[in-house]
Length: 73
Image (tube, rainbow, N blue to C red):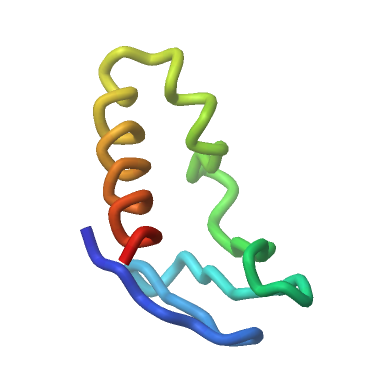
């Protein structure tokens, strides 16, 4: 897993065709919105939707655990 820090307006580019941009951050800095620009054929869904899929659930749970560990530091 790659973890990157980004500021408002900064982007991450994946495979020269997926752009993820920090679009909005609330005043407390604990919530944010991202804008994702990707080809139409690429499926993009929220992680919680994968929790129902047993194959993908393991990945989502592992990533949440890692985020929780980092938050406590």
